Image (cartoon, rainbow, N blue to C red; front, side):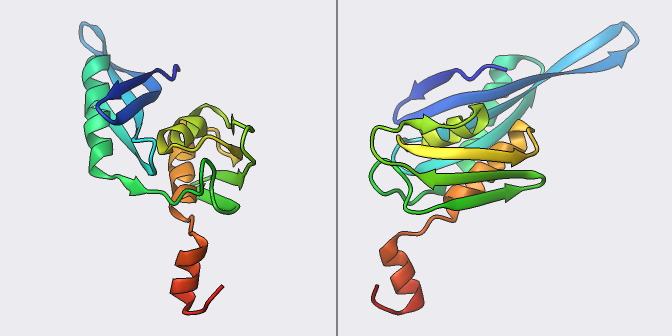
Length: 161
């Protein structure tokens, strides 16, 4: 729905989606809410969280708490990424390309939240397949966790690049 951001210490939280769920009971409908939240420190750490509650604020808090449990480290090169990468989750595909300084973040809502939370300032992205926000966020984080620096690749291969 909306993507509002808040700062908590060094962590920035952005609410990617809030969904309302209705359960039909004897007296009418009982509503509950789901919140998809992306948390990052703008210095290469990012995670997503999913919270459910009967009201919106507790759902967001639960999502933030969930995100802090599964933090991912991202390898950055300046304000962009070291190389082209494709993230996949379910039917969602996210292609990320490094961009020159001054390009800005070219991304849709769900992927933009992940990229900005990680601290990336210049990047080109394109999402294919599913438009499900939860799957797009998971695919974007999958792409970012695949990133390797030149030194890391050289060390893994055991050769000098």
